[in-house]
Length: 189
Image (spheres, rainbow, N blue to C red):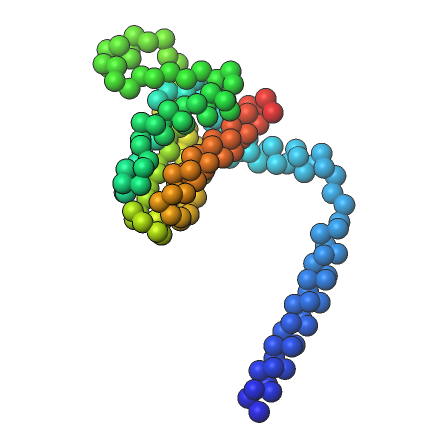
């Protein structure tokens, strides 16, 4: 008897889901004016990330490693160089200066705009484990020197052989996504 009730319940549940999804497909087919959708999306981006439009240059874009990254073949210096290369490719026309390592007196003499006009892009790569499975968390934070304005992060796992490649691909994807938002907010895309 219990088995028959379970089967009937599953059949009824499946039938209800099927009917619900068939109605949901009809809702998706409602025509939408694409220009309205695009304008409202751009307004949303400006509301969320409008502070990005005041950034004139980026300083000291870098990658920080946490956890077991070095044990699996990730190198903080190489990843920072890779980030800066991806930045140059995705942020054409946006200046990047390195000011870390300069004495504060030299930084004060540099022709730099105020804090809100100096952007920074930092990626943290945190890995756990040195053999399968290796879990990783990659987080991109960007903003000006006063506050973080944009954040993107991802979780994943893999083997010692594929995690370094996946980390580089993820950094590339994150920088590209940030570049799109950065230029849309500025009205350049």
